[in-house]
Image (tube, rainbow, N blue to C red):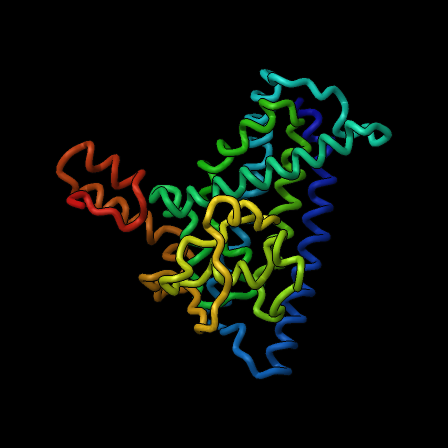
Length: 291
């Protein structure tokens, strides 16, 4: 099955190239919008920190991709549903059913992963990288953790349900590239689409550190999961403050990547019992051993 990955890898690389080019154009467009309107969407100090973490993040993604595929393939070999070749036989109704169901399940999986990343401190230590910027623009979308090693487990049920590993990876990629383009302040609202899809308006709320907005709008492509599970919050009239409640006043890549891990390890070492140490790792961010 790794031979399949080798055959399809150029397709994924081409998608990355197309998406990367689109992102660069979007950044240039947003810089033009900043110059035209006088709004501060980018600052050099913050953007430099974002750009500094991107190259190693891309390298990690390239190296880690085949590993994730290998794990997905292990689950696929033990699949409990056999879709046969439905994922690429476009002349059947089963093809449409396959991709629609995969889209919905992958998006729900992302919601569960994303919500867990805000509720479990060990996961938050990685995800906080993405939230630590005080700005909100297209470069922030690529401000991601270099340690993606925990997250693929959330998606393992999909190949176990018979979805081909390549199709799962493709759907994940489409979702992540979609999400890049909701990291903008240049678009106010998208009208009726706001009811169904995750939009820049919804995602600005998610990146806010205003008390009313914390841990809201976890959706990937769709916002329906937040509406169903009571984590939806519409933007109000108050000015949004981006970042985290305890600001990271550094744009150094290592500080961006590992500051929360350092704090977590320090808290664990201070804990008196093994039970307290485990709770500090798996309870919510901000949990104290004596609380």
